[in-house]
Image 1 (cartoon, rainbow, N blue to C red):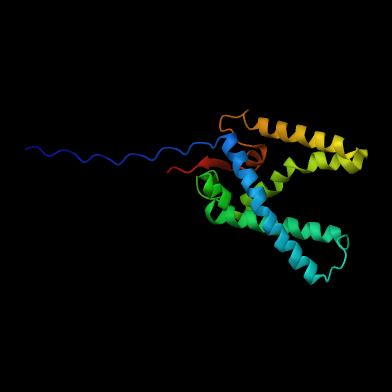
Image 2 (image 1 turned 180 degrees about the vertical axis):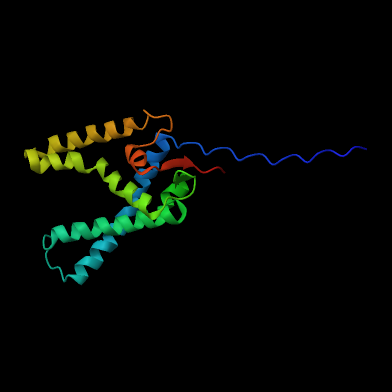
Amino acid sequence: MTESEPVPPAEPAAPQPATIRRRLAAFVYESVLLFGVVFVAGLVFSIAMQQRNGLAHHNLMTAWIAVVVGVYFVGLWHRGGQTLPMKTWRLRVVGPRGSPPSIGRATLRYVAAWLWFLPPLALHPLLNLPLPQTLAATAVWFALWAASASLGRERQFPHDRIAGTRVVVVPR
């Protein structure tokens, strides 16, 4: 009987980039989940500021909610690379080495992700566009942003390219 040489362990396959469809599905789920986060953040703000009118401290409340949502995303992306909707859709945000992004990268990703929303919404007050035209511009911008993910080999959205992160599929 001859001894056989041990078979070296197979190298793990490189993680596959997430499809645009899967990421957008997680985005919709994330939007539903964020309703609760924003509601609680708004409630805490309203109680702390003794807000009696919904328009009182509006800009400060908007900034507060942006910070709370940022802490939610940055914290979860840095800790494990996933939010609950991302876990459901088996997605993970990874940095250049395949591990969860650093706090700096996760923060840059969060700030850059606002490019989905801010440019078309800035048209409304700057150009005094009526609401239907603003919504149409927003829809066109979203479509262009989503389509831009298909340009690269890794199929990543611009905010991931800016931050040096990738969204990959978590193997089963």
